[in-house]
Image (cartoon, one colour):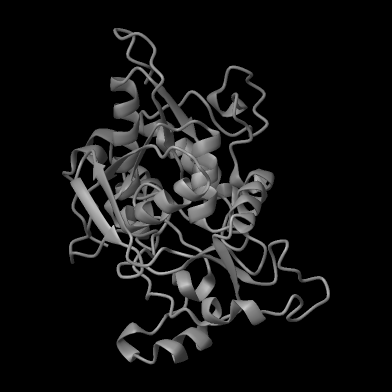
Length: 330
């Protein structure tokens, strides 16, 4: 589907940002379709960005499947990752803000981290998951494997990855002791002048109110330190967090509107703080309602029966998938 030819070209720039850690499902399809339609209505540009930062879970076959399944739905983009396509006219052959795979954009993230670190917005954190569970000392708030605080990264949901957007608030252990933080905790190679060896957390301004108007869900309000705490921007294994990578990429690619699932509303508040700290202008926000299965649970990539790939094999059409008429059984 091409741009709306009845409107003059605009400065609107939207994006699709799948994570190749599994097959896309119905929730992804409907969110990405919304992003596509909004770009068309604005006579703007739609960017495909592959968010493949997770080295343990990202797979080339999932990236190929995402591109193929989205085209099958009728979703097309004007800029995208260079996947060595022999067709120079292919939308996957790049664009003015290449590369479009996050795994190839580390220099952008290092630059953003450096600016935040020099600006005093970050502090190093050596807390393990067990340390955090002990500090929280509340079984109903304990951190389970895979959460943001456990692993030091966030992964978005319907429309992007799988969000873990409601992690327990960081108790401030290393923030309180950072003046005595060793330069080399485990190895001479570790130094607080560069990322690695530690989790690096953003120092949220406790009590500050972050407000924004979502173009779909209306006014939103979050309080730093109450609704969310100091969050990781760089993991100890050398990988930037979703929060940092997303902000750095959306700013560098001149994205003017972000369309994604409502499970990322709290991440939007965090990202607004990063935009401010980096002296960048945030995009507009449009958060879509989530799609749930028959038991009321929001869809995740574990719902193999509702993946686009499985539904295609079962003979469903793009129209059926996008209409909401499918039975939501897992």
